[in-house]
Length: 148
Image (spheres, rainbow, N blue to C red):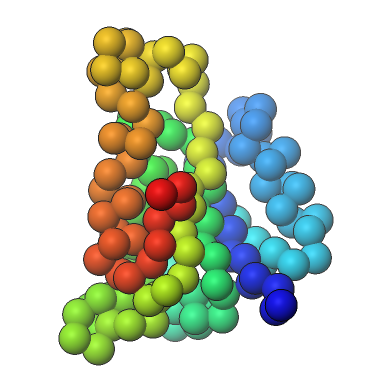
């Protein structure tokens, strides 16, 4: 069986304050079968190289978004990355099949307790419900959203 090629796209705008994300990302960096990209480090001015990023996506089987869950969403650079890299006829559309069949997962941290992310909790929604835009991104691009 072939090894899965894993791409971790790390987006943390305040890494010096990270208690969990930075150590998790460091573990991924140290793994020989994982390609890691620190988006804020690689693109400090948000000038994302679309061709490089699209090639990275083509070269991997599993796509991981790793980020702190700020304000119920991804950090700004990850949204910018999505807007630019996941182009029509690359990631979706009639000829947009580059991501079809790949697996997609979010690895995130949240500042609240698990009980806060329930219908009757402080945030009124589960993390899964709050991540529905990313799940739909995976669906639109033909990726398998994990967990499913």
